[in-house]
Length: 454
Image: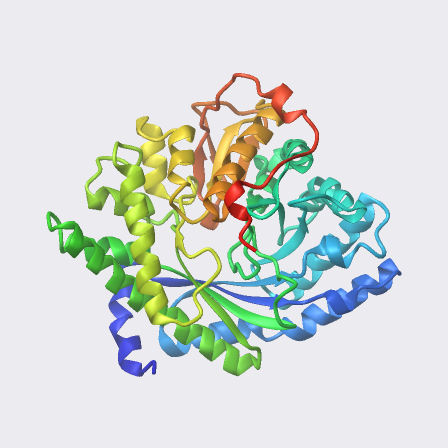
């Protein structure tokens, strides 16, 4: 049982070490909102979300006040909109109308983000999938809270290279349409391989079709807590190091379990999962890169970085699964560049490159995340980077993702400021050699041999 003593034990973590519950995310199924009439569909979507989530923000604030644990974001994820709008959307603009409806209701209920403007196309695309993908640039340029994701591959199906090529173009178009805000629209767009159905973190959250009608998922973050714990075991053996990380992850996950259960009780919505992800913020001391340095690296990116990150990720998960029976989502260590001051420092020092980040994603939770690249980067180059990252996920049976931001009008050596949790980022160079002929092939990359396990 979770007791008040465990809450008291976390007070120091909250006050001194940047422990927070990063998000309470309510997943909402919109399958019962499907209608052949677009206006009726939009009204059903608005009413279902409003009725389900009208007390979400108030509940989060109440729990934060009662237990003294900051809850940074309250979010909503919905059924992938390509599935919901297929019966009534005949043009990209029809899907944009749904995006505006989602944005309006997100504003009304007061959440920080709403995810699920999504399509699942790992093996092929329907007409609705393609219309939604083509609508993404306009949808993200005219909304404030809506986040978009597209699953382009999986271990079981391979990689849909037609969709990979299209999403390279979509990312570039999104950057162009939001260039007045330093291409901020791309910060709300992520592409996946092996996307999980229960991820509470944006921009990749959507409510999977295997989920209940409504669900509460919680994402907990504690890089600062882990860093502080490791300071007390400097120079100790790997065994001591691992035990310290596991024990700390256990305590952090218990906080998430408490918040999730309480939110579930108050809202009358089933508890789904706790996502224990060491998700950094721009705040000093709240950095995954700083943990890697505490383990023994001069900078993130130095030799040994991938091994240190693998160790960290594994111990975080081992500690988390002992604390909750329902750990899910992306759980592990995030390495977004713009949101992690230690990562930014490593890039600026020349220790961390795009290629090293790609190697690190073989062992971490997600992938190439929140990376600003020159605005003149070609769409095919972006597609090639996506294909590389998705291949890592496909072959290793893990979730990988790409959130690249080609900042229109800016180049290597400049920085871009996104603000808030999104932070700022130095613009990183990309390999300038062409992959056009590879990306422009049609079809899909087949699933790897080890995917055939039935």
